Length: 339
Image (tube, rainbow, N blue to C red):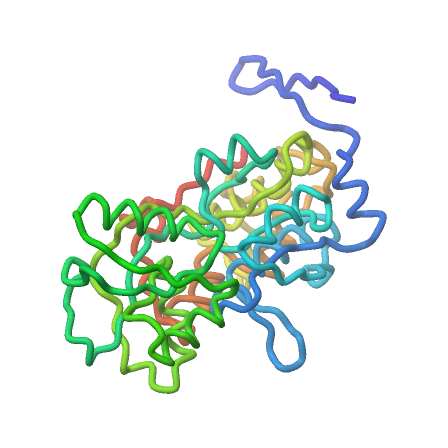
């Protein structure tokens, strides 16, 4: 049941449609007491498990943010490691509630699979990893080369387009998982490994000698990566979408996991007060408590914090913010306002 509310502001009446009753997915999540989240089978910086089975990564933090928004507890998540070929079926079938698994937002995936992308938590592009002793400086020097590729990804199609447009030949060698791909590359079964550049940096640190390989300068595609949900449940779509937007808005407003309590108690900025549930917008419009944004920032951090500790300067990957910087700092990360 949809309820219509009228909120007066600046002398004008704005009609807002919000869900008083939770959607089917949120009901199911609350009933079982956790969010079932699909992640990769092991990609450092994005989603990987340590020896104790604890998952970390920028995609994992999306799952944790949604759990914090719903339960006030970012640890109420269970993770399903999925291959690229398994991921969409797992979401379509209801095996998982959301899929933040370094997945590229494309027209086909967004319109033909019964799925919705909720935003972009990492702007990426496809590149090439080669050993230094191969002696190539550009992918354009690799006519006739063999490439290790993960099956079921946009990588296969992008590679075909790139070589066809440049009138070159190549041999694809496909594998089911990223681990199999990097092991084959290290064993010399292919001349190069191609994938999203972020994945190349993540896989390179798995080599016995990471300095023996280099990422070539070409970026041959657009790869906006983001969380995915099933179509048909707008309430759940909103929760996942606004959990990401809360993290981006928090970074722009200077709200961090370290200062969020101080900001909640003392900030006079109405943007901060709305973000943290002190005044204005209501969590009930998404079936959530009013402090859903506060709980995300307190327990997971803002977008910049998640980026830095998982893939950025504070991580083993050391990837520069680049396109993933805030829009106000030359990047593409931009979130609608919470108001």
